Length: 352
Image (cartoon, rainbow, N blue to C red; front, side, top):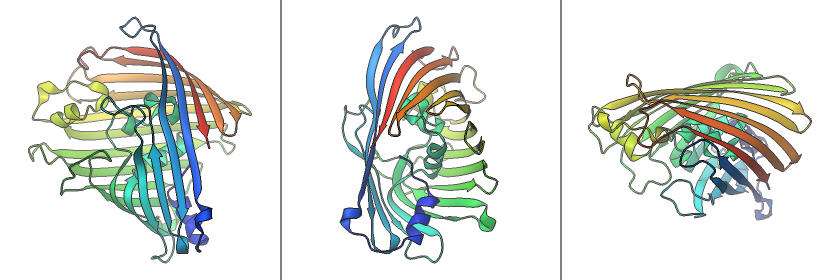
């Protein structure tokens, strides 16, 4: 279930014509996991069956190459405040290309983060569950989708693509949008394929906090390299953040870090992720990934590390299975009740 940013626009642009409702494309994904925790903590020996994500997508071609896209998510439990299997709208937007000359697009509605959308084109292990998500979503620094608008186009000299977006800034679950918007710029450089670079910057504010500490800022960079046959894939991502300590606590960001002692101040976070994926056979591959986060730079005891390793096997083109081991280590003063975790997991991804 892949969805490129500009390539999809290109398909619309070159095939601009009227479509009937019978051309509506329905796709989806079901992620099914079984986990066993095995560190000597209160969770030791716990086995958990879960469906971390269940998606149904409607791709609706419109006249003159425009597009309506709607995606519904019925995840078992997106967070501790949500009800099990409550179906919610994940994406719902209109792509307009007919009003432009050339390869440009305007997107309006509940739009996905350009950064995360691009990252998931390279990283296809989201089905492992939250610890396998890209770090901006995993640590709740960037919402996957938000209400707003974006303009997408090509970079000059065939360098790649870019997107500029303005969104409410509080994610799709926000009930009280504020008048101030978050702005983000995304650029992906593909000219030197198979080496790809991406840069992202977003800036906004939290209206409920003091103006001298209410900055919400994200600086992102990533690089991807693969062999021509994709036998090897290597990737790295860097993240730099600024948020009020009160927002980190209220929104439960950074995997439960405790910053209550710094209430009223701005917190600087830094993190990163590196991974390697190697094909081990016609239908199998091995993945190794390391995530690192310093949730409060300059404050001691606020670091964490996670190591993931998985062996996957494609049973068919639409069914992928994985055996994964995972270990997370937290600094001694990271958060109240936060302790090291380790688990083994069997996961399956079903595409339809």
